[in-house]
Length: 115
Ligand code: 5GP
Ligand code: ZN
Image 1: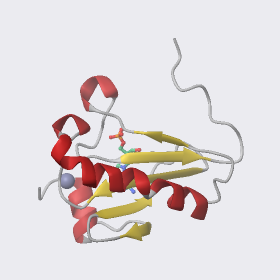
Image 2: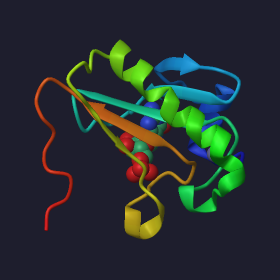
Image 3: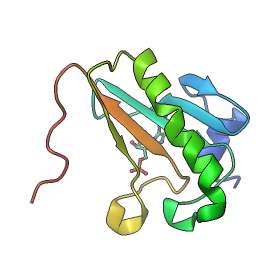
Image 4: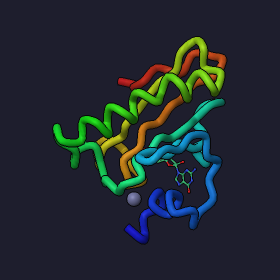
């Protein structure tokens, strides 16, 4: 997807603060952090949303989650963190390339949702 921001980051056309990379995944710092540590993990392959995934994507999705502890540890999030995947309009997704947010910092994060 040539007009997708995250595909352009994968291709190196847009710079990013990369923290991790392998054949399938890339992790980098969010450009507008909502917590002292705010990282994103994306698949290199363009998948628009989690709603576009199915059981056949289990290995890739598993990899995305499995790398979280390592990234969190390396970012100093020893006392916990929050992972978020926003999906679609109702989920508040802004960038339509699947991504996992990792958020944390020294202080507990605010309540997840306000009622
Ligand atoms: P969403 O709301 O889709 O779950 O989150 C998209 C995230 O991508 C936002 O937190 C936003 O700050 C981040 N973002 C958007 N454009 C860029 C960019 O060009 N570089 C980086 N590093 N993050 C971006
Ligand atoms: Zn993309």
